[in-house]
Length: 161
Image 1 (spheres, one colour):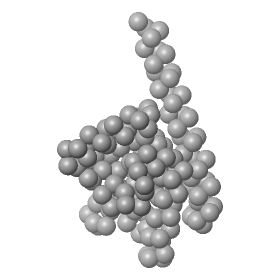
Image 2 (cartoon, one colour):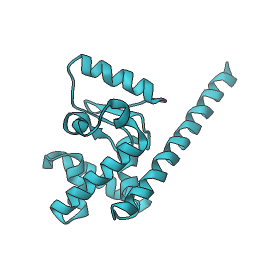
Image 3 (tube, one colour):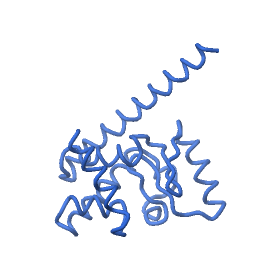
């Protein structure tokens, strides 16, 4: 019994490392492509999803799945219950506001699509605000009351990276 638990822990850690590497590799590419300051998208992904491409945030609670299929089953259940406001993927793209820009949930969860969309969205927010701090705040929420804690968390992670 002890060995089985140890193997599960090791597998879980290796999966997290693999997810992080996948997300970070694409993040670096899109930071360069969209001229986003180095490691800013990485800090956002760290805070948003802990670099898990199959993360879903619903009602303020994070759910981490091992596969895209598991995440999609969960999201389809939310949709069947009438919920539309939840975030998905490495950069936690909100379904209610952004799903129309994807052909499917599968596409929305695809690492490259999720990160490219998030990078482009952050870049557009920066163009509108001329300020990376404000762009990060608005990436999370248009409501000022929801921005402070999030922005502080992202900027603290960014400094550490």
